Image 1 (cartoon, one colour):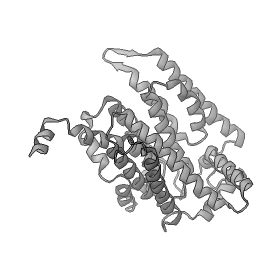
Image 2 (cartoon, helix red, strand yellow):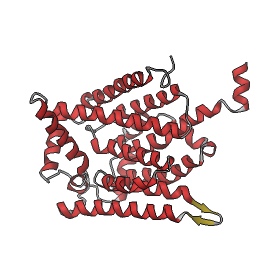
Image 3 (cartoon, helix red, strand yellow):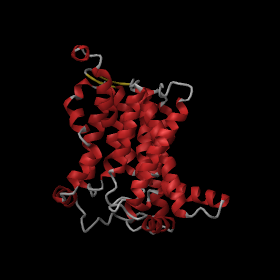
Length: 334
């Protein structure tokens, strides 16, 4: 059986992805460390009413809230037996499937061709998702953030970069953390010695930032701006940073999310394709700094973007290309 290539491969892929997506939804809905779906529905309604518990930034992350609500209304029109909790779970299930398929295409764009290796990457992704549930709900906006980064990476790899402009507008309505996406584009077209830049790409990058700014500012004008209130009395970078470093639960939770992948990728970083090296230096340091200094990092779902965008594909690439090394050929012949 040739997974992904045989006549029935698309169905087999779908079955595998559905099983994995079901497991993620199960963990997020039942884990004792997660937020109950009943509480999430209360938060969801407060978002719709413009009265989010943490107004800044929750109230401004409206994309997933309205999409989920629209999905529920659509299903409810089909059958009144489909209540809101079931709608939420179905939406999260479909969101997982979409992420898996986009990730598969992204891995292939990095010349990761082994179909079993690609499936292994999706499997690692599944367990990263399902082990990132501490104080987490279904986290629709977090997973849309992952989706937007994967879509952006795929568009860049396929040289369809003009689509980043509308993508950035919708990404701004989802989470402010998507602002690094334009940097993923421009960093691929900069030569440092001597310095040169592709001005067409520069124009698309600037336009995508403008599209992000329109969404970012527009939603704050619509709901009204309110300064961040902080969490657990923390308001400064130092407050959050010290809190996170002292929160011992964070460390095993991070291992549950990342395993050993960041360590392997850092050690063998210079062997990776240039695109992954550049995205590593753009995304990883900034991502870790921001989330250690302005969030509760024990909620490790917040670190899934670098895991899916960089660590997992880099690990797969290292495995696939290991077989082309002379020492690998020698060992496999013994």
